[in-house]
Length: 555
Image 1: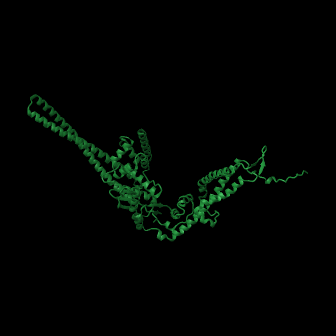
Image 2: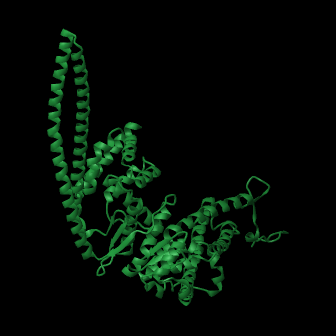
Image 3: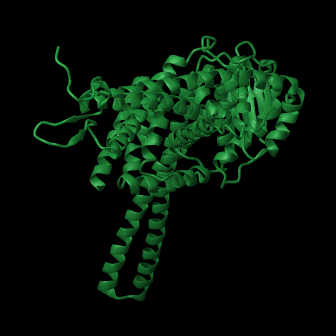
């Protein structure tokens, strides 16, 4: 045994300092000074917290988008913290993280994580997992809170249903007229209940719009209570018109005002006409009526075409007679000039003046006949083109959903056995109302632009009011209008549409894509509208290619 002489026994484990070889000083075994450790810790915490938030935003919604939330461990004590759900989760994660960080960086003997890299890696992983866990727990609490709030909102709405909702069609029409802005919702009773309850929860100023814009959209399968009011076909609440289904009696009372208000919201700077002659008509009745109308129109076109052709023949017969007479007058003038030169009598001079005056009159008359012939030929071409369009349209009578007949008649097809979905009815209503409000007597746009612009505007109106896109027809025409809108401002298209100024349309198109573009591509525009699917798609691609080429040349 060796005894320590005169020295105290040293406990190695209690001494935080060691003597370094070659130096007579005590050194701190901690790797970094305190302020650098704090700075590094804050940087790691900030980066990993951002990573945790990214994981929550991109990964957690998919995990928690389910209806069964009963598995969440829910403590009623935390209910009051729900408006601050994120802060609670983050604070909880930071408390645990602080304890773990202290242990990692300040362990007494520094044997657990002796290297700087090991401490950094472990701190980063701890931050990531602990922050994710805290925010996950807060997310769980938020969903449970939202489920309870949905149930309470449903009970509140049910208790005050009679005071909150307007279900009478006449009263709805009056409310639409008085409203500054109208939104539309349609769907199943479950979908309408979801929207009503979400909007009700979103009215809580303390919560803002987070729950309606984030939670309700992320938790797509959330099981909302079904409201009894949502079983109603039509009702109005808080500037929103809710459609469960389309019923003829209600539509007849609200459609005029609804169409006007929807169009007015979009074209706020234009005067929108009111009081069209509106009628909802059954499918079979509409088909019979349209076929009879088309037959009558075709007969009128045939009569007009026959008269135009006869007039053209008469003018064509008159023109050679005029030209022959003018030749005789020129011959007489030549003889008068010869006699006047040979004999110099005043009589020949007077006859020469009279023959020249007569020739002038005949030249004017010939010019009028030739211009008249050109006008009648153009009129005949227009008649034949319109007849062809009418003949083509007769093939689609069975699928037509509405019709505008000048000056002010709007007809909407509604089959009681198979009623239209609300979106289809609204799209048809807005489309025909646009025809009505933009109608200008004696002025017409080329049919491609009339129908293409009308359908384009109808889709935009419903996209803003219904927050969805409804595509019922004229898809290729709308595609081309959307392409052209990249080059032609909305205001110019709108001016053309409401003025029905065909000359302004041609001028605008030519200024954009080159002189003569409108006239040379007009047959292609028509093919897009009236060709079969394959021909219309090919014509659309052709037009877009031509416009792209014109754009490149101007650049």
